[in-house]
Length: 85
Length: 422
Image (cartoon, rainbow over all chains, first blue to last red; front, side):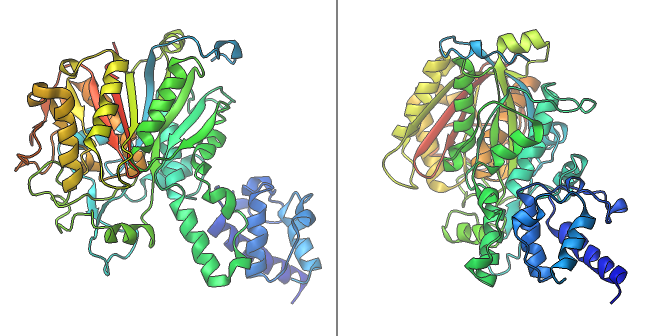
């Protein structure tokens, strides 16, 4: 799978996760690499749920401290690919 | 609004007025629709949609009409999270707008408003989902945010966070008495100067595959199939209660604060009484109930003859209605022959920890309009319940105070005396 296809697949998986679990209404029209973590309604607590769902759906375990400094969805995608997604 | 802490002396006594009300109920999620349904005698009880009840004995419940709360949450940028929290937030927004503490046009700013809220069951949906995940995947796969989502105070915390309210923030949990105890506690805080403004009320939402079946098995739900006829408070042919979901929120503040802000006053809390039966976990005691009623009357400085009508707990179970009518008779004596009694659970269902709030709002609306909603299904009043029930048509009421009763499993009793806006 090309890097672009891999990225698109992960972004699709993250979107499905967030559609299911988010407690806020993200801006789905502009959902993509440049979406900020804040605009997705994630904070230091709710991102724990995202990590839980990522492990369930994508099969990659990330520690909370690894995502502390992440500010965009693109950075999260890169981290997931780096960890074997 | 002032943020001065110098007022928190605990020594001043203030008149406590209601400046905002909000409701998310089986009769609707706006006050106007709720009142129209009440006065036109339309129940919110129907076949339950949220879960499959085909294997259960009872299939009726009072649910908030589909999509209404969800639409309101969306307008706030929220998605449904936990039913009790969601309904609480919807009703809290309306109460805050009504009291002009927030507006649709202005960005939210932190305000020194306390949140003292009631619930019977708490975050039932979060509990159920967390347990379900744990049983399916094992304890090591329990969702990390189950802890804060399942807290009882997830509700008051959620309101505080959503609207930036920086006063006290905690829950009162006492089964079906929760909201009335919460309102009573809030009333005392404002009256005694510990808070200038408190957002109070109650919320419960529990139509899940665990909680509702359990209630089926405790034997207090009406098995009458017709949802319109199922809940029959104080009727000779009553067969039990019907559960409901909902939330009601009231803004209590000092009279001085309301006048200085120039906001309309919707009513006044005049007195509060509370007691514990200390006799049985689920069977009520008329002595305990009467004690709370007398305390509330005494605190309000009124006699039974001064009460214009009673908004009863009125669960429509045989034992509860018999006990409550005996308690009313013991406190009111012969005056019980004339004081009209209305019971709202045939409309809202029994919303447990929210019921006191929904019924207080109903009582304040009755005072504002000078009309009591009719009682549903009271064609055959129980002669053993020696009280004067409002009939099946609305009746005019005067502006004298209302007594609002709430009694709960656990033996807790809460009684409020509510007055009009003058």
